[in-house]
Image 1 (spheres, one colour):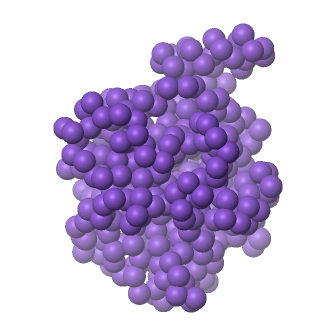
Image 2 (cartoon, helix red, strand yellow):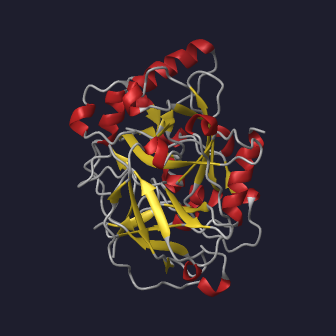
Length: 387
């Protein structure tokens, strides 16, 4: 069965093959303690192109910002698309993500790991579809840490989902967001995406699209717009991630560090919560239920409202040499990529155990990576970079 990724890109029709979260899939994690050394900080986008040269002066930077704001992708030289750790750049462009631009990014016609040795190469029967249910409003009270990620690609503005997670370097004051690798970097075929922002509790009251046409920014972004000033995904995703075929999916995760457009209050203080990340969680065979959250944007959804699915997880192995992924029944579509997956930890609290990465062309289930040593290396690196 063909699989596809779950981001949503405006004005871009997408074929239905296996696709990783965002735009590509991540490689295997079969090397012990690959950890932080196997990760890279980057910024870019799937199938994107970068500028022929980077700004070297304030004047050049202003010109570059204006070019980006006015669709400067056409001037990018794909051969120089930024891919590597030191390449991430995401300058704040005041007013870029206004309500109208956020909504247009949602209008997409795109169809959108365990380290446990006994799980290697194991795939359980395909789960029955679980109908996505609308999240309870207001989201800021019932799913405060969940939000939408907006970014620009050569094909147009795109959306994913993300979750506020704890930062060990800044207890109670985290500015970290967990999402899919394909939501920040194009993988093998490209580099970092641009103009990446996180909007927690987007459309807090779940208003229908018709009522958002003339909405103010406070309505669609009640907790503000947070610009990424740091991002990291796995080296495996960068090397092997693909928009179709599932390559890189076991490593399709990323951590973004964000900052507010104004003020000094942290993201966690602003939204009131941050989820713990449950690294090295048990095999799917030992977890009773996983709940996935996101903002699906492809039909029959419109990207304006939050949804969730809860199901007993199964196992999905795309390659016996790579970590086995979690899989649940779920009808969420493109735009849900990167959204957090939650399970009850031994202490009784909910922890983030995965994120949406891939699903079939006909949306009946979703799969996400097991968060092992490589994921922890990415997480720790971003935290330490801003400690």
